[in-house]
Length: 132
Image 1 (cartoon, rainbow, N blue to C red):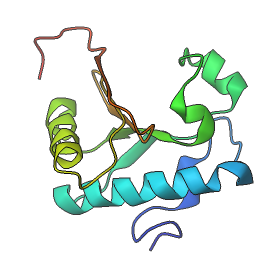
Image 2: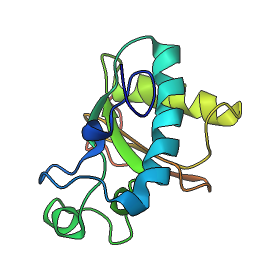
Image 3: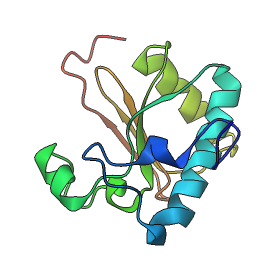
Image 4: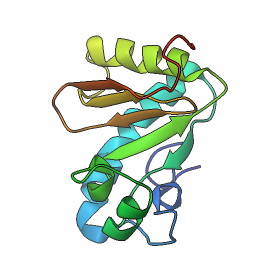
């Protein structure tokens, strides 16, 4: 059982450099987890959080965007048994039906980025765009 939602714990969102999510971003990570829980409920399997909150230093090190939503614990890079394209489509369907928040949705070779910025943003960073 999670402490943010039924299946998500705050520790899953900590920065890969070991830094915890700062208290000032708790509301963001709670809202993100609630949206991720809805995705998890639909796919009926665990979502692996590849990257959640990032410190500014870690964000620079990993090549993140200067104003990344990860910096405020408003984003997660996700992986599961579905292909990234399949997971992206599930998330897109949930956004379009109003079941989860509008936000950023990015497709990568091995994961999907989802954030709760509140405005629509879409991108495809796969190396081979023909790959599903």
